[in-house]
Length: 615
Image 1 (spheres, rainbow, N blue to C red):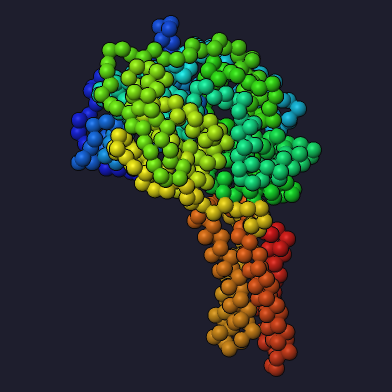
Image 2: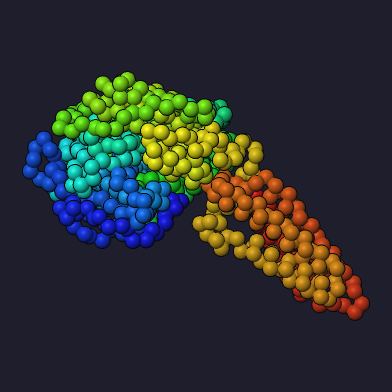
């Protein structure tokens, strides 16, 4: 879903030779003019010895008005990758260099702390719920033992060390200052990097801000309930959870590691957990009321796309790194939770028993920042000044760290909701908080609206004197209330297996032949049957295509309600075909019947397909 644009050759002024350890081929598609390499750093700065490699990419802007300060981006997670967004970010900031840095232990770093044992155990929990979180812990222990045999010391994979990597990379690349860009987990990294290296930071973007003082796990259940309450479906959500806890659904899906089909047994708590992750996507947020209502009514076929999404989520993170960070930096768990993400992580952290990492980063004292903060006021809805500037709350940052900060939040974010991110932003000197209506997690990746990206680009252009370029309170997507859609799992199944649409295609072809043949031969009934059939198909395709171009995710829940009446046009077409066949039988002399029989068989088959399966 992420737009990638290939940009031409970059400008000159390459980084110092010492900055690039290896001109290795980039492991992901990147724009021309991008260099990938590794930053070699100690695995543990508190116990020097073994070194590791942190992957990064540098894209050089070719804009004639190229600015000297790049944007450095790190993915969230923890354990999400960053390099694949190099092209996307180069489009967002065409006049600046783009630096994307991996997290140590991530997908494009060395070593890569992947844990297939943990992932398979998580999938087994969906196959056989009775195995519980203990099986996940067992898989994680096997992973830790394998990593230890390779010499990996998990105590070196913490937020503190990741922050130091960001600071070291700026020094290696030789940039006097840059703009920090973090999303979700990496907002913590960027805040700490600004504290540690205040003289090297021009401005900072924090998308879906996760402040250190927030209890990630203890807030998880409440955040989900708050989100469905804001969407107006709390009662239906609780009814859905109760329904599937009482009678778990059997959902066909695919093992992402083995590529083999299996049947997941999903309880209500499982569905709630998957929804908590799915609601990150703004497109899903728009259709969530209709989806939750349909699931509460027993439409189990809608669980297939949710179950399929689990596999993608499990393979997008390196769980060795993820649990190393979480167990050392975030190990504050509630006594109980309905979310298996929480109970799994709790079991893993108890089994690994890693010591808590030291908190805080010692700021450098040999540099003095030149930037000034910018506390802003705005009349735009959702846009509020929260910064105190350098003279206000400087102690919260460390001496002199009051750089301009833009904090973005999605209205329906189930992980970093405005309830926690807005007041946390108020404690950052020089910060402006902007809430975006209708958006979930990671505002800048919401493809349904460009307002978040416009806001970020405008801020980076002039962080000390910018103004809101769009209206963040205007939701870009139509929200589908319960009952506003024709609920069906057929479109999603057709996307997985296009051959399932063969009856529709055959019906359209026969209707076309009827229209043309009947018109040429002067057979009005056949011509009208063909015209009516083509109208039914055309209007259906037009409605579905309209939804596809505005919110493709909605097709996983159903189609516009108007599509149902188009089925009755198809009934009318078949009725006209019956009349044409009767007229052909009674005609003198008798006419050929086989074209009419073909039309009746195809039409009858289509109606069965339509009413018995599609709807």
